[in-house]
Length: 125
Image (tube, rainbow, N blue to C red; front, side):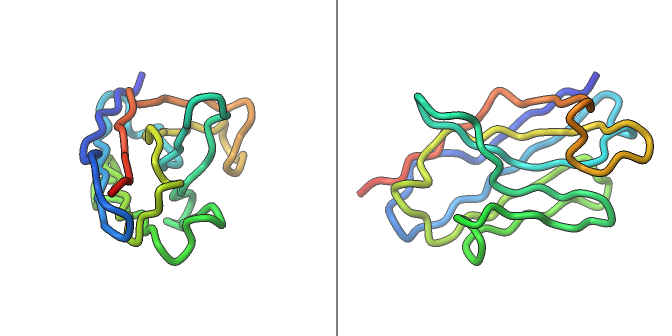
């Protein structure tokens, strides 16, 4: 099992910045990818950014150039620096840890996903 704890959400004005952090504990040595997803009421959870094998970052098109994902040296933390925030970025952001089967690249549909409880981001003036 992997436990994830997020921090850093809040209220920010359009154009502002926030930094989200997530710390993993438990069987962290099994984690292959860590990243962030977001969800608004009535919509499916969507990928924001993820760090996969070889520390390669994958971003959703709607955040490219604005958000930066990074992973700590111990590979048990992941951060999301969000700049130039827009009202449409408002959502609950969830940290994700993905454990794939041996040799299967991300995303492994039959892999195991762990989620944090979510942190709310509000973008409003």
